[in-house]
Length: 457
Image (tube, rainbow, N blue to C red):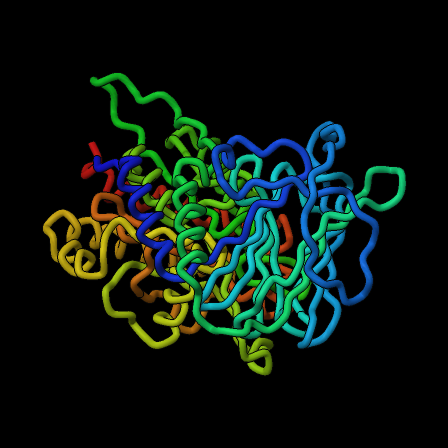
């Protein structure tokens, strides 16, 4: 199996940084975290009093840092205020934090990386923006690190950042002020700072450690298939949003039910790309499948429609396999959206296989056999799911999904339904529905290995 080497990852991260990141200096309260040590951009911010409504940039001075809080700080509120001339983003915290702010382009975003923070902010917070902020999202990003991604209406300049102590109970508020950027481009110093920031990002650091699969059977015993379950999105990447919940929570719940059902059967080993609300880059999901030699890869997602006037009428599950050319325009747009997950989370890493490589992989002898097995499972899964949940009008489709680019493992992506459909979202949030889906997929896996199992022995 092919493994990604650390040198390739570092080179990829540095190479990407030239494509439009811009980093601002570290602002910290307390010692810098281990992954920021050695940076020339580490500074200490003093504790201040609340600023005037329209603050001006001010010089920074050093002051003794207060004792570090015990356990993670909780971010329990966030808000946006102001107008297009000056917009303020505020994050309410139960204690002091260490943070870094940097900009991204194409699309325009501002990212806040915060160490040792957990979010209890309602998922719906941030859907609607004000002034220069169109929306924002938040969540876990890496071990010991959380992220807030702020979508902006055009290029902005971070006018000021402040960590303000509020009262005597240790609460703090992190504030950022945005103004329209005077120039659209980035300076050489900004790009250089961005490269330094990107070089710190390691693919192995961006994912919590995965539990090892069950021990392999003895050489003379039948091989027990390993099923890789891939709940899409996670952490700062919430995926599609419904009226009540978010995609990342629904697919994780279904993934856990599927894991339980498969293990209860005693026929399979099971490994999940994520078993908690964690951000896992797309490339890492593929890497896990290859490293553990999965015999079947199932990626779980929930679809959505931007055209809200059609949301009430469109529903049903769809199963996708890999193809260079999408089966239809809807499949192509969905693949483009899912493939941009890392980009939108502010953690884009170039894929291991280029677009040209995909074409050659699809026509490789091994990939042909693998893709044939994926098509077989897609057909079986559609039959099993049809007996328990509603399917879309055309439930078997294909597109160029990055996470399905696996030449040695049959891989499918299942869109469980439309979270933009209020009725269907309520069903997907039901544990009874989740168990029903898991049972149907388990039955499909049993059927698949009953007919194709000899290939894996």
